[in-house]
Image 1: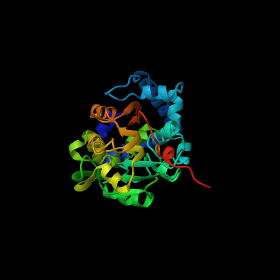
Image 2 (image 1 turned 135 degrees about the vertical axis):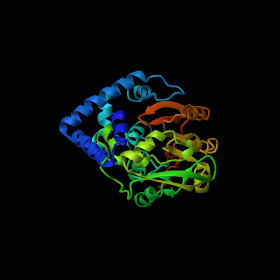
Image 3 (image 1 turned 180 degrees about the vertical axis):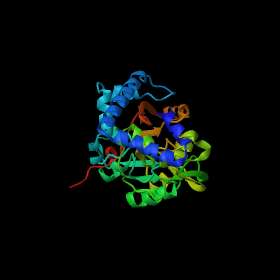
Image 4 (image 1 turned 45 degrees about the vertical axis):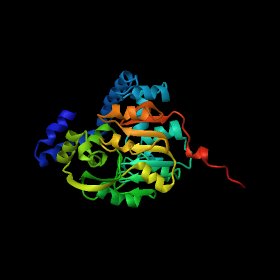
Length: 329
């Protein structure tokens, strides 16, 4: 599949557009959907079986589901991820990260506090929208892509920062990909293939800091195959603990990091001795061993890979709702 897409990226745009449209159309037909369900479920089953050992290499999705949901089949997990009902209940993440983490750790409790690094438009693919909209959590969202930030201002009510989270306060170069005017809440993906073919589920989310982007080939493919606009600019950057200190926040229940390669720099911007972070979801990257070492040396336990996001949980979690004093009637 990836080979076909790479070949398409080298074809003239009119031919490429027709080919992508045909593939997407075939995948939307009942027979195409059934074939994709069978193939993608089989691949998930194989992946679950061979990734049962945790460690600094990461990617331990089998280890995660074996411990968090023992006995669940690959077919059941896949259906959980792509069932329309997931979106109807307010979950917006690409692969059900918000749904699974809520089921395992948060249990619809509140009030809570989140930090969303790489928030995009605040809705499509969001790991934190559910917690703000359905559970009335508060939080802070970072988004340096100007076109995405304009939409973010209309979709979210938490503290918004137009800039990057980083290891130090200042400025950094930023490479933004965009498709023009973004519209939050577009049709969610029905399967993994639609995430690859549709820039609404991937291409425009590949912006990042050039010095740290570990998906250069993927970014170039997205730009060329999906005809995205590329812009290089300088944007403000902030340490997360600087922002939290200014807000008077000492507990973060959920930290979501999706920054295309700069994950280590983001995490270095947190003094874990001063801020209690309970659950972290950080997108897997080529530098995962650095992420693993940094977090496990700061009191976190590695739980495994939740599709795109590596999950870490504090060894002694202390959630916001456990620290709220009881109301006096």
